[in-house]
Length: 541
Image (tube, rainbow, N blue to C red; front, side, top):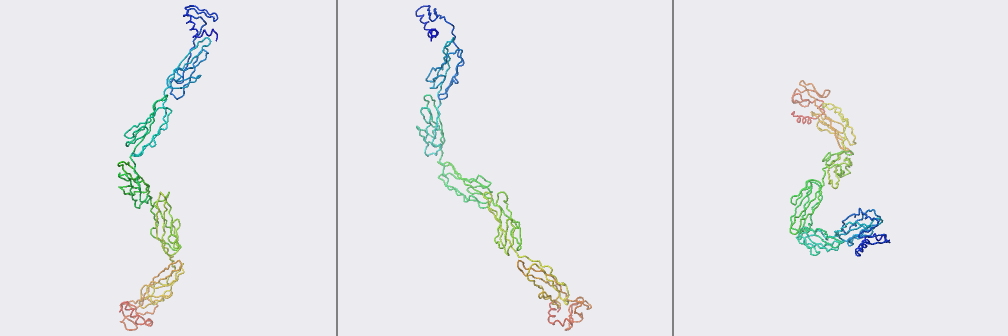
């Protein structure tokens, strides 16, 4: 630095002025420096003090432990170098233009611009306040936040902190929990906040952390609670309750969460509908025991009602088929399908649609079963008795050559019936005193035994065909004489009418008027005893 620049320095200039005062001279000539100091005036070229504008910090108040503020450099018309200093290096230091926080307090940060050219040096300052940091207490906890009264008290896990301040513990409710040092003491039932407090230290303020402890009555264990059945079908007997055992003497009550399925009165369950319900046993608090409950599930499965189109019983001919399907009141959707079975497939079989097929003669039980589907329906079944019969053949074309004639005329001939069966055909008469049959030949008995007789063709059972019959009525009429002795019936027969005298042996006899006589020719074919018997039966004697 030249002497001229030195003399321009404020400190040196002030020193020269002080020297002049001491020497009591009013004039100092410094030819080498080109200066003349007269009295209190230093004559030199003009010098200006620059104004430092805009000098600032990004924040004038910060918390210890956070980021230090940054410097906004001042602007100046001078080109002199700018440096920064801290008035309290215990609070903050400055290196170059970077501030470093050191501690809590206040410091003045000064920007100084050196003299340059026609500008003297200049300064500008801002204040920085660093406040205490609040430490974070981490990891503060209890080994358990809920304990039973009389049980083991939880232990404290001390918090960690960047501060070295002493930590103490307290309780918000000492009627529940007391703290001795860092030991928890259970006092009563309820809840309390456990507070860890750290004292201020160094650059850190005080701080707290809190956790909660609840002290409860001891919950009793309800053991052995059960239902006699957890799944039943609707319509069956309701399950019974096995009461739980407990160390508590509290009263036990029962409830259902779905009263559309099951209701409970006292300890008796009543089934109302199908579905699911939770049956709960609740024991009231008593003494040192809190209330407690235990639950079991109950499922009521619906059962469909199955019915057949033809219920009870049905019949079918052998080799024939019969459709008799079953339906259920629980049909479609997820409900079980219906299947069929025969108790004797040698008698009848049944397919998946309920159509039965006759196989052999006899009876079989046909069962329709609806399969159970878990959660939807229980298994259900219904039966009917099926009888498989022989086929009854139809006897067609059975006829007599005549179905009404007098007993003195030739007997009618039989036209035998036709049939799909190969069974033997025989014939019978319903009254052999009027007509008899031998093989397929009819014989009229005669002798005044007039009337109607049933002629029947009977076919015996054969193979798959049952026995059957068909009948025709045959009317036999004896000849009659009118009042003048002329035959009315039996024209062309062998009777004569000579009934004008009482019975006189072998030629004629008298009975009520117009009764048939016996001619000489007839008398030749018959004995007297049959005629007498016939007359007795007819009430003529």
